[in-house]
Image (cartoon, rainbow, N blue to C red; front, side):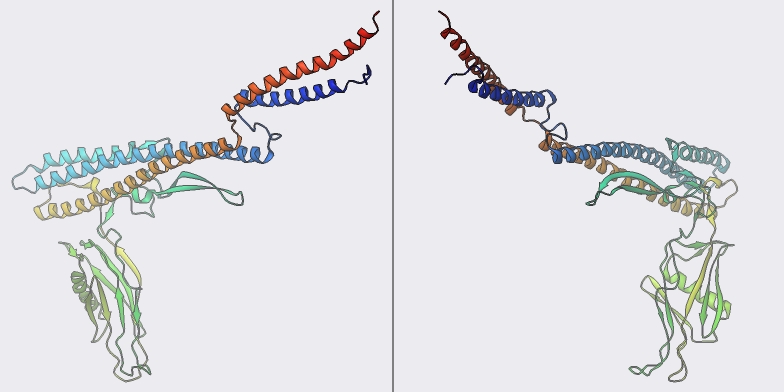
Length: 424
């Protein structure tokens, strides 16, 4: 039956053409934007993930900038520290020259003073973006932002590379600090400790009824020299009494750099303090010392423990900027050489620390860059359009569109055929 009111063929052709045009619009949108999912309506889950990861990538880009800033600061500090190290080496050479007989020490002192001025300049010039890790007012931990971390619960945190400026400072005006590497280095380099490592008590027990001696282990130290006016003291308690033990420096310098030297000095200090009547011994135990009290006279006598507290070091410091050899004799110059060598070692250690931080920052920069690339690739897998596939689909849909138009035209021509029946 033919009807001029209803044209099923045209309806079908029109619906097909509408579907083709809709798919063609989607494909054209993907080709023009390059995205398969460019808005939440296309795929809400993928769009949400991609949006979050893009935001994180922007944050990681800022982290990379922060690492670049940190790398520049470390590079400035390391460059200045390296110049300081070379200058100290020159000062050491001048001291060696000054130790020769019949040398004009005043002229050498003039050269040393110029080198000392260079040390000040290098430290104060090591500034980048308002920060200076070599000339500080107070030792602190500087933080270089190194990573952006999103936890499994969505919580965000930042990873940092910590730089302890109290270890790198050449000058430190903080009164609670050591004054910086060049502003004053203790001869002991704060690398020694006494007591508290192990304490044994005398007395008897059911397993061993023989009375045992009280003892305490002393810690280790390196490079400790006490000059006249310097002291190393601590409080030692034994058998209910507390005594102040003082090891005093000498004019030529009391060498405490080995456990053997420390043993002799400690025995002398205990005797000077009149601490015990008899039976107290000091012995070398590897790189440490053992203090041992007298064995109790009667079996079962209550134990008597040795305890050490209140360690204080009033140790002379070397300020390399105040070295003056104009009137120094050979022995004093040799002492300055040893102390300058300690400063040189401290500067070398600080430079090594900065070098390690510099390497870590460079490694972190490379890692962050690779992570950002990986995130971009992951986002692309979720939302990017496959341009080859979309191009093929576009051509197919264009053909379908032409065929749909043709089919709709044929369906609409049926009414014209019916009109021909009424013509005479």
